[in-house]
Length: 172
Image (cartoon, rainbow, N blue to C red):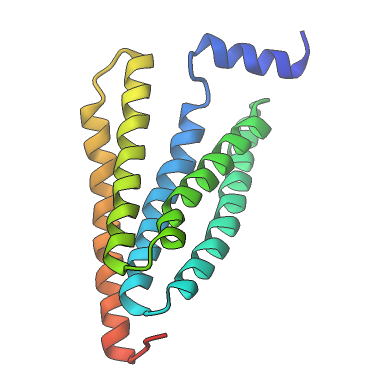
């Protein structure tokens, strides 16, 4: 059995062997990007500046998250470090694409923010529902925990963006 076959066998054996790597990428993207976009949406008038900043942040952060996960898993002498890193970086990037999408589709700031949060809530719910089904455990507690963290960070970012706008007078 080859090295990759062992890793994929481990994934099948655990039903979802890299769930932690996916949670790491997805949740970090949900928290950091919803926070970033919320802060920018309050501080900036130009949606293209928000889109550009979000794209740059998404790409660099997904690469950073994947690399960090690789190094963390590799430090434990785990042979699945590369695949774990790909799951983390991939989950991060897919989540970011979904969160930025409303800014390409709509031109109304409130609609963009509402759609972004609807996507974030849906992704959190669907992932936790799926994971709960696979692990045969209730998922509502995990869903509410992930949702609370995401909303809390976004509220903090909203306040930071509002303060930056008022105190610095920046309105791009």
